[in-house]
Image 1 (tube, rainbow, N blue to C red):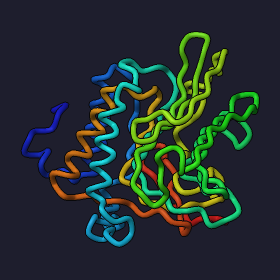
Image 2 (image 1 turned 30 degrees about the horizontal axis):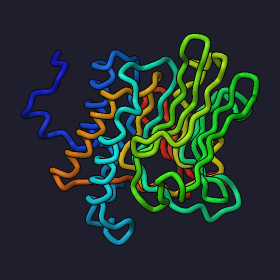
Image 3 (image 1 turned 180 degrees about the horizontal axis):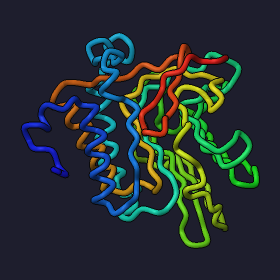
Length: 274
């Protein structure tokens, strides 16, 4: 069996397939045990939106990708050269403004709504919130206002949500376009590694299929370790391929349905229950 695809076969792969392959290799090379989970399956290309279609929606997509790439290059030292046990959820998305009076969930994963849960959502004040709930039900939230963190709703952005454990300590942090915009350091180890399951994670609604959101997604990956410089360089390679090939398919997530990760690491699209 060939581990790496031949150059001829590589050229035949769809862009979204390449992301999953490259992400998996980056995990191996960086010495982590990350299991990348791509939310853009090649089986649903009929649902993808191309950069041509997006000119009036988010405008200047190539310019936005170039800006993200440059910022990642400038801030790459914010990432460690080694990974720590924990979690990393990376997304490249264009988030729409939340027009409701409830949180609009981008992703949600956990064992219950009350404990051992990781969530990213836009609250009713249109602040980006990365929330962690530990095993005892304590809640820790990093809240970012779009005006002071370099994030603009309706514009493509790279988001990394991390939780890591270092000896008797642990940390939670939020990274926007390579810049750490929020961090909580814990003087104890929350011991959450491998406790929060991947299967059942949702995109576009909370774990119960409620509190939906609307956004455009370029890709997403989930890992059982924090990101490293190597992983970020792979993200830059992906962006460069976007720019070189002039192809930028994005998946549209709206409040008509959401995605739930299955046992086989693919996902089901489910009608939203609001």
